[in-house]
Length: 158
Image (tube, rainbow, N blue to C red; front, side, top):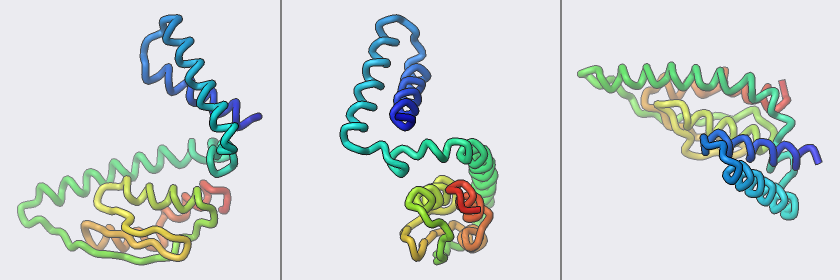
């Protein structure tokens, strides 16, 4: 019931934030849409700990600001590389074993790497990640990284 209520509340809040209009009709339409999606998800048994990981919300509130800061810093670094007349790139692939245990943790880690400018997760699996970096330092920075430790904390395995 907690997951159902959480899904409904987050969908309805998202509807209100995205619409920006507060007319009775649109508020009712959003309510009905959010309720319908939550009921369908419940009927499909998609409200499990992986399908809707509401238990990770407190950890996410700590992880997202850090990730946004890292995305900002990497964006500045990539901008400097692009604007440098010598274009000092050294495209590199790095392989490493992620320390996450859950599927949610692995996906969060792989997506966090890809969201960070200058790196992209080419292949993600339980045993190994393959990451492409615009520079050798960027690719090697993913191996045994602060991001790996923070995502492990995020998934509840500090």
